[in-house]
Amino acid sequence: MRLEPVCPKCGASIIQTMICTNPPIPTAKCTECDWYWEGEKEEVVRVPFNPNGYGVATIEVPRGSYDLTIPMFTTVHINT
Image (cartoon, rainbow, N blue to C red):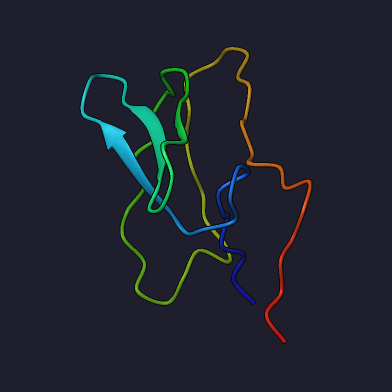
């Protein structure tokens, strides 16, 4: 199952894009109303393309402390 985030204001579909800076800035815009969101710059970790998915991956990162940002959903709309 794939979760599709919808507009928190009107429930319509949203378009997720990136502002192409280094590091990039995530954005989201509603397709129906004027709702818009712009996030913070996110660090990028480059991984080899895997056409079978990313069930298992070995990633080497420099030593340090990292925060992993994961989208959180407070409401899930399911069309039945």
